[in-house]
Each structure stands twice: as C-alpha cells, then as structure tokens.
Amino acid sequence: MARVLFAVPPLVGHVNPALATAGALSRRGHTVAWAAPAGYICEHLPAEGTIYALDGWENGQFVLQDRSARGLESITQAFGRFAEMAAATFAPMVAAVRAFQPDVMAVDQQMLSGALAARHVDVPWATLVTTSASVAKPAPPLDAWLEDQWRRLQETCLPGTTPVLHPDLSPGRVIVFSSKALVDPAMELLPADYRFVGPAGGNGRRDVPFPWEWLDARRPLVLASLGTRERDERAAQFFRTIMAAVTDMDVQVVIVADESLSSEAPANVLVRSYVPQLALLDRAAAVIGHGGHNTVCEALSRGLPLAIAPVRVDQPTVARQVVSAGAGVSLRYGKLTVATARAAIMSLLNDPELRAGAARLAAAFAETRGAEAAADELEGMV
Image (cartoon, rainbow, N blue to C red; front, side, top):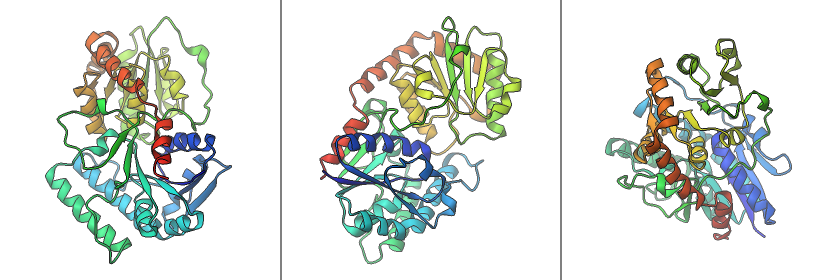
C-alpha cells in the first residue's frame, strides 16, 4: 500500500475534491496524510488522519487584499497571494514531506509550496486542478507576467535550480476535476498531461440540517448561491434583486447567503447560511451562481442549466465555457436588474435549448468517475 500526502490551500472549494479522492484511497487501504496552512482549514480535514499544520501563513486564512478587484486585477492579486503563501509555507512543507515520506503527493494547483517541495525532496507528484478554467493558456500579457512571477518564486524557494515554465503543473500528470466536454475546443490549453476525471463527488462534505418540509414538489426549485466567500453588501444586493424578480413567480428559490436577508425574503424564497447542496441539486430545476467550478460541475452533471454572474479570477472563463456549451446564460454581477434576473430564470426553466445543452454535458459527466478515477491516477504513479 502507498503513502499519499495531500497538499491543499485554505480554500474549502479546493479541499472538497481532495477529501473525496483521499477517501477513495483510504478505502483501498492506502495511508493518507495532509499538509495545509495551520488554521481553520485544518478543521475541515479528517480528524483521524495525520495533519501537518503549516505555520507561517496569516492564521491559515486566504483573503484577497482588495475584494472589489475584478478582471485581470483580480487574477494578478490572487496569484500574488498564492505566491506569498508558497514562500511562507515552503520550509514547513518540506519538513512535512520529509517527516511523512510519501510515495506520491497530490498537490492542489494553488498550493504552490507543495509542488516546489515535491521537486526539492524529489517525490513524484500530481497536480489537482479544481476548475476547467485553470487549464486555459492565458492571454499574452498575463502569460508574460506570470512567467516572470514563476521565475521569481522558484529563485526564492529553489535557488540554484533551473526554473520551469509552469511549476504548478506536474510533469507526471495533471488531474482535472471536470470534463473535457466543458472546455471550449477553440481554447488553447497549457501544455500538460491532463487526466479529466469529472467532478469528485460529495464524499467528505459535512451534513447540514435543512427544512425539507418547506419544499413544494409541485413548483420548480431554483438554487441561488455565490459560495461561502461572497457575503458582503454587493452579494446581498444581488440576492435582493433575485428575490424581487421571483416574488410573483410560481417557483421556489433557496438562497445561500447570510440569514439576515431572511427578513426581506418573500414567501417563496428561503435563505440559509449553509445548505446540503448536493441533495438540493437533486431536487432543483436550475441554478444561479457565480461560476464556482464545483457548483457548476455538480449542476451540469445533473443536467441543470445555469445563470452565472462571475465575480472574479477564473469565474468569467467558467461562465464563457458554460454559455459556449449551450448550457447556461451569463449575468452581470454588479448590474443585475429585476427584469434581467426574471428573464434569466424563465429561460433556465423554459428554454429547451438550454436544457438540451445541460443534458449533453450531463451525459459527458456521466462517463467520468470523479474521485475514484483520481485515486486510480495517483495509484498509477506509485
């Protein structure tokens, strides 16, 4: 049996696919351990496993300096933060690798210190990619900027070695928790040995109570979520617009947001801070979101069309992929109107082309095996 070390960032959306993959490996008898920044993310990791809590990174939080940043600015800001985290956690990551002595490492693409430590200690490693947007080759100006940033980071952590062009992508294999069908054929990909395994699945998610009796099976259900990180006033206004749009519609909407919005919700809207998302998606007819890749894949794997209002970083690319595949529509996050929201929801529920596009992607996702396939790939590197 193999020893597998997972290196993950303090981002729940990145940890969930790793949890599912680790669960598959554990069931097969392999020994799994974790390396992550010390702090809250360690609370999401299995208590029965070995956890190397990496000191040195801002109480384990990953917060963008300017959450109002959009477009290219949000991408460069996010990369800068990931690079800072890599430099701060590189030494403790190396110590964790040497202490655990893994046969192979599974390194989230954004946990750069894991990739650098694997090279430094000479351990085989695979990259875990949680979004189909991350395999796309950036536009030339951004690509040149990233190349310079990659060089600087490698000179800091691996002095005396020859920098590689994309140190976040394993020369072994890159495991993508998505389907190739979601990637626009016209999109140029970064050079790597990609293994598209599909959505990881729900293993590892915590149980969340939900008032199931509130749901009315006679009315279509729409799930609206901006994830767990968008909880500011802009998000609140986005959801207020949706509530106003559906007040007199024969639908039910579950909104995942701060429950302070409950006092403003009409009778056909339920606001919850957290929900059992996979179970709700099994009952939903459509989804409104910001382009978080996990939710997008979970919706599409069930044949649910999406309305996506991208906020930052990779979300605009994911939105373009969904629209290009004919499985959804795009919304403007900061400029959503009641009329636009209403029209989008009506399209999601009634447009046969959107539903057919989502069904095509569901068929493609059905051919993938998610976490089990990811576990196969890691076993193949031992």
